[in-house]
Image 1 (tube, rainbow, N blue to C red):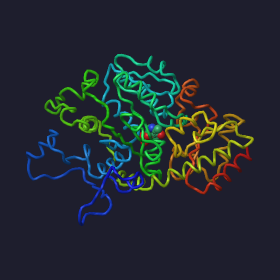
Image 2: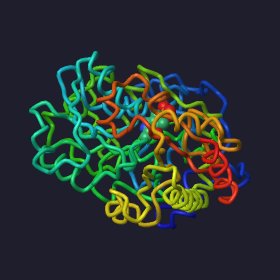
Image 3: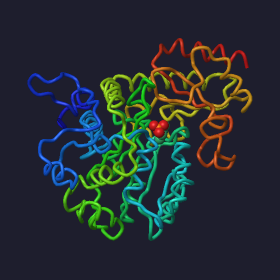
Image 4: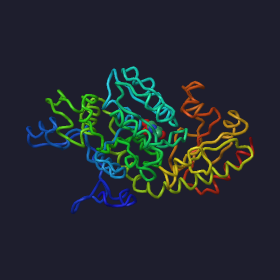
Length: 426
Ligand SMILES: *Cc1c(COP(=O)(O)O)cnc(C)c1O
């Protein structure tokens, strides 16, 4: 499958029916699987044999869709989770525990910031947040003896900073830890972080992958490139016996599949944030057109950004594809075919004008979402990021007047007409 081009992978990867089997991936709506032989079931529980026995651990529909995402990213193994939050939680908990430390770009999704700054801290894992534009020296200075991972977003939601993946990968590898990249906004159509040195990729599949605002979901993909055994003392969970599986050692038994197998066999077994097979089926329908939708999202977003930039009431616009944008050079390197459909802007009238303008929009709706077919707006300072104080907002790259605008797949003339009439009103 991996020799096909990405457009073909969107459609064909993950599921190849045999003679007489369903043409499209079936929804295996079953919690459990039947066996004739009690011993065989025992071997499944011991991870001695691979097979299905309980959907909390694995389900054929989910596995087919995970395999497609794996192929799109160019990884070796992948799993679906119930949400992007669960993916980013498991990605860390799979390799860190109480007493450990991680480094995270300060420009990340608000939910990820809360998860790493507050929730995992209560579990004993500390996070240091670094400016994504920091120098190599500043980045290197953030590492500690107990650092277990470095995390960033290819295109940050909603700061729209573009991560210098090579710079982050180099620092992570120099300190013997993996780089985890949340590739939600770029999708593997526009960027494949493994090609730039990232080791693990996470997704909120809720966004462009689903693309229709139908299902919350997430995914974790492993490149198979990180050498856990080389840094065995840092990652005992992968390189020493797991007593809950009779002393099995993940790296010995599963090689390049160690990270995802452990995440399934331990994290999913114990925490249970599975994606429902029904949702995985819908996600797969989204994936089949991802390669058609992403270029149109980018094209519409750039046109909307150019329109806003030229408008007298608009103070500033962020869009990495826009000539002169602070991240344009990084975008040209990492996202040569376009970044994503999300842009941000502020009005000369400030925070109040921003909130009022949103109320005047007719087609473009105010919703807590981004990255689906319908254009929508959100004011992060009053919505997604409202838990943050002014300082935290600025560190996360969220100006108080920032409107996050997810440009959809409607005709761009209609999108611009709606912006125009709303801007006239404020
Ligand atoms: C939305 C989002 C998440 C969280 O995903 P959910 O599916 O909403 O849990 C994580 N990372 C990024 C970049 C996101 O945009």
